[in-house]
Length: 138
Image (tube, rainbow, N blue to C red; front, side, top):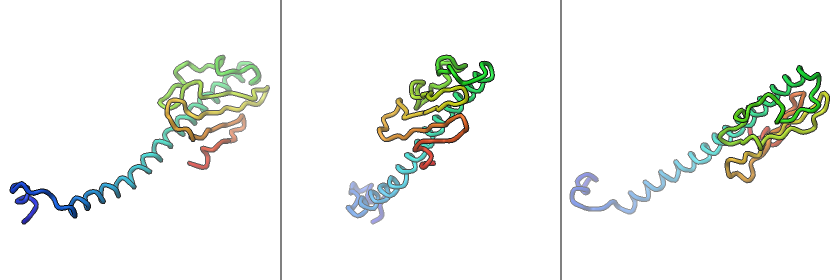
């Protein structure tokens, strides 16, 4: 008796048929969940790098106008309040430290708009040297 005629007769699926379907679904989930996690992590990293790039550009403008990076803060750069706001990062997730006449250090992360307790951070300095734990996951 084929499946169609069995359904018309009101009979149910066999246990073997149900196990085959469950196995196929489990295999698909074993592939899909890690890929989804990898794609979302990549999106988070991209947003953090984009935010630090916006800060670097604003710092270059600040330096060209003032002759040095000294005195630069996130509040007095030419960055609007919404420039650093994204899906994963808020403006408060970015820090600008070690600001001197020719030095600075920008850190992004961990993002506050998602619940990922072990999310790493990304940082870059005035020479373009990257620091942090995002580098190993790219």
